[in-house]
Image (cartoon, rainbow, N blue to C red; front, side, top):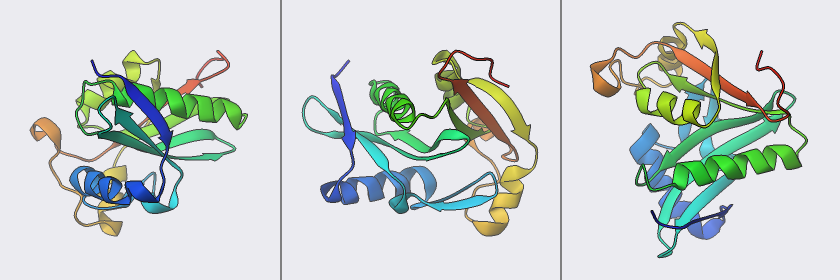
Length: 167
């Protein structure tokens, strides 16, 4: 596995971020929990492998609910970029005095569910029909997702950083 270095994104990362967001989300706009985000407006970490190649990115926001991972994508899944980016987000949450890290994924995203649960996040809520509502804002969201699974619902995952229960 390659060594991964994580840092805050800077202007020189714009092209790589744009390409990643286009591949993963059809552009820089994501709609999650009935909120529209432009990933270009959020603080972002980038992962760089030991050869200096862009390996992934994590966009986030911090508020009273904790640090929300709005977008996490790796250029080559399984190479360690996602794990390194999530660790950087946890450090940022701690530095911001946030007591938890949380995110939303979709019902079809079995790989993400496996990834996050293996890193201690737990499913804390299901919003049935949230993706259907998001399609009204972003009609390019597909109706069928990964593995041919109909795409309808959002699953919220969270992990408290203080060791408290995840309610």
